[in-house]
Amino acid sequence: MKEISAEKRKLGVAAMLAASLCFSLGGLLMKIVPWNPLATNGARNLIACCVIGLYILLTKHPIKCNKTVLFGAAALAATTSLYAVANKLTTAGNTIVLQYTAPIWIILFMYLFFGQKPDKTALITVFIVLIGIVCFFLDSMSTGKWLGNVLALLSGVTYAMVFLLNRFEKGDALSSVFFGQLFCGIFLSPLVLKETVFTPGVLVAVFVLGSVQVGIAYIFFTTGTKYTEPVTASIINAIEPILNPTLVAIFYKETLGKLSLLGAAIVVAGILFYDVLTARKKK
Image (cartoon, rainbow, N blue to C red; front, side, top):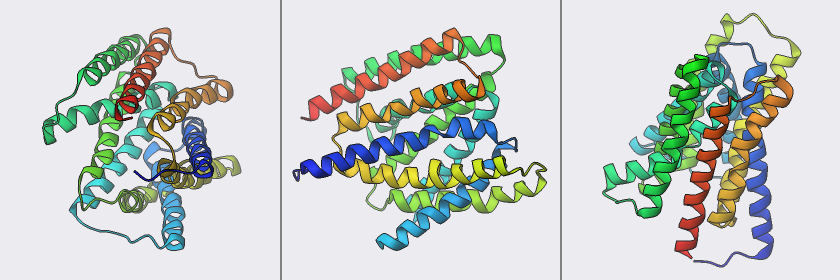
């Protein structure tokens, strides 16, 4: 493996931190926009598609279009749509933490589709995260937010599918991101025509969602993963499920229930446990 210079390591850490901060804006901004969540998702993806498209042109990244890339695009479109709807039906904290379970589904899919058996660390992590998920759904039984939790959990499943594309030779993550955003923009943004609230605050929130929270965030993320060690990237990436609900609690006065808060702590701890031990084993 090629040695990464100290300067590039610093760039990688800064890029990963910037990506996590950008992603963390999603919960708050989605709450601010009073539109149908699918309309919001269509508008933000249309804007993000322009940002990613410009980045692709400037970097001269070759676009691929094949079954694998299109499958990834469909998975990404499903992920952003499920996240948008779930964020309206349950708390921002529940949504982002349940989506953060993606690594667990990756472990399961790797076994089901590629025959790669999980090791002891993976099995322990799955057990820990499942306990956290149970806490969320026990809490939702009293709050009536179970549907939002289900959709958030499904977004974690589809998000895991996006990561699995790296296993295929014909896959290209950036192409899948571009086409996934394009599909959402084309098919969902017309729903905006049915909305009636177009105040400056709402329009600014939608623009920031598309340009920063999705578009620029993915650019930072792809840059950061090139120059950041796995353990460092995992720790920095854990900022999102912590900062996301914190911003919503501060500005939108939405808080997690006690069981959901416990579940969030368990899920984040479980994923970090797996990431750190896996990175150490690779070293």
